[in-house]
Length: 88
Image (cartoon, rainbow, N blue to C red; front, side, top):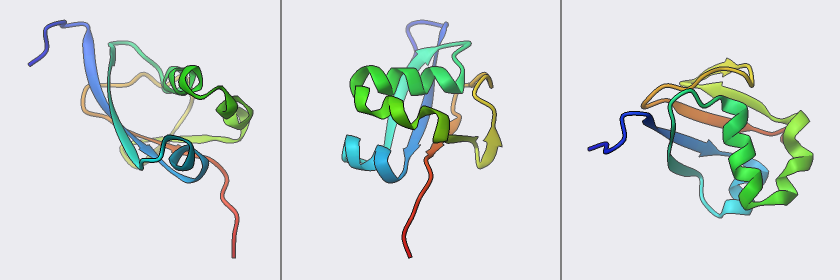
C-alpha cells in the first residue's frame, strides 16, 4: 500500500539501447503524481548519463499509445521508451 498519496507507480518498458544499458527489459518506479513522460527520461539519464544523446531520438508510448513528452502519467501506466532501431 502507498504511504504517500502523492506517489504513483508506473511500469517502464525498455527497448534497444535502454535495455542494454540497464540490463533489463522493464522496471517499476514509484514517482510523484504529476510526473511527465520526459521526466522519466530525466530520471534514467541521472542513472546513466550516456543516454542523454538519445533524448531527441526517443519516442514515448503510454499504455500502447504514442505520447508526447509533456504527457502526465497516472498510477498503473505502462511507459515504453522507444529509441530508433536498426538491423536487418
